[in-house]
Image (cartoon, rainbow, N blue to C red; front, side, top):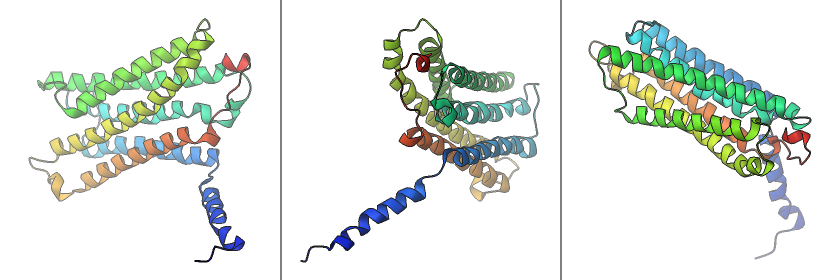
Amino acid sequence: MAAPSEEEGAVGPRCNHRSTAMLDVPFLPFCAFLGTLGLLCVAMVGTWCQHWRGGFSLDGSSRTFNWHPVLMVTGLVVLYGAAALVYRIPNTWSGPKLPWKVLHGSLALGAFVLTVLGLAAVFRFHNSQGTPNMYSLHSWMGLGTVLLFSCQWAAGFGAFLLPWAPAWLRALYKPIHVFFGSTILMLSVASCASGINEKLFFSLKNGTMEYKLLPAEAVFANTLGLLILIFGVLVVAALARPSWKRPDSDSPDSRQ
């Protein structure tokens, strides 16, 4: 068999270069798209609970439960994803890191507060209705994710925001913090998806069109679950992209 010519051999690299260029999306437009997708997820979960599930209340009824999916999607997925992407903003790549650390930690803390409120809503609903707590796979995954999130935030605060934390500790803990950051987000997405599915199974029966018949509410909520999954995958992909990572610096200012 004849060896490929120089021109033929160059076709592969050129195709690879074109493919890479097609995937080379600028960060800011990507971030704008991701923000729009996150807001769409929040709007959809709110619409689902308002239009099909009766709205919101604090009286311990099913309308109290409706706060749970809204707060969880907003806090544990969308706001958490925004916190994770702070260090991918090009403006963070130069100068002191402290303001960006504070922003990152504040967004994560806001996500945690919303998450705790979401847990309080579902526990209040269950207790007022005499429903057992913590028996489903969804509840185990969700609570495990929240506990892991709380440990992640506390450890990150101690290692990166306390001024007396030694540099060797920050260097040691940083890859662990990054790994669990992505892990918690994907666990959050999985918990939300399982929660949507569980809610549909519980709600679409006894006088309503069954889930298996795919009524409009099921289509809407299933679509919401897919959008949450896409949001989580895109955030993790952005975190893994080498060209969007802040360059490491050994200067003292960059470690503050």
